[in-house]
Amino acid sequence: MRKYLMGTGLFGAITSGYSLLKGANHKRFTWRVGLAWISWAITLLLAIGEARDIRTASHGGAVPEDSPIAGKEYKYAGTPKPGKKQKLDKKQKRAKK
Image (cartoon, rainbow, N blue to C red; front, side, top):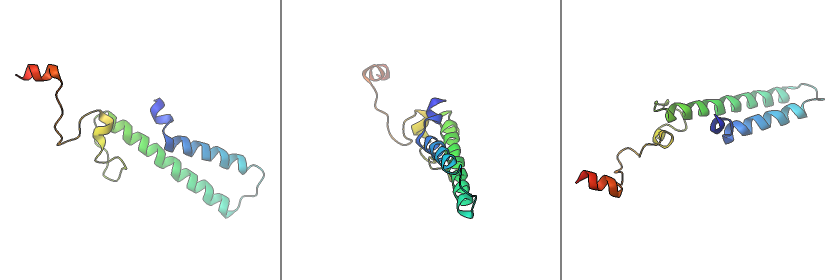
């Protein structure tokens, strides 16, 4: 759970939301402030979506093609890159013979 909460995207979205909230305390609501909040919401949703994709990939699932980690699921699942030969250690070499 910690690796999802402390991911740079999610951490950045939370801290920018905090600073946006802190800065909007005594200001009048204008269209620029509205756009800032919409932008923050989009950033937060994208960060949550990426954390969800990472969790799916780490459990061996497939992620959608439009995900930033699509095609790199093996990095999160702990498996070797597809099509790449895995080096055998000494014990595995002996067992293979």
